[in-house]
Image (cartoon, rainbow, N blue to C red; front, side, top):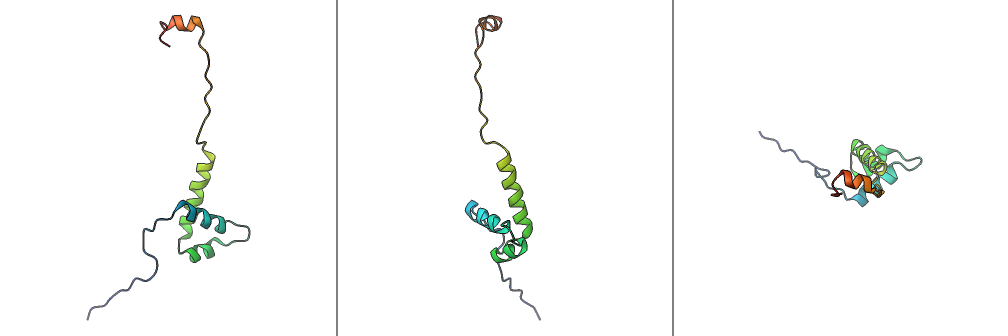
Length: 85
């Protein structure tokens, strides 16, 4: 006799918006919060929460814009490069 398996629970490969991720991270790492409880409430693995936190921290650490300073070129440098600068 055959058997059937019913998969109940969240669908795999869900897509979380950046706002949803931010909300989950804020709740998971609030003072006194327990990450596993937040993970169960949102039906997401604790490992994924820690991965999102790591990504968020590295994105905050890397500057999105680095200012550049333009420096004038002296006449001597221009003549050395044939005035093509």
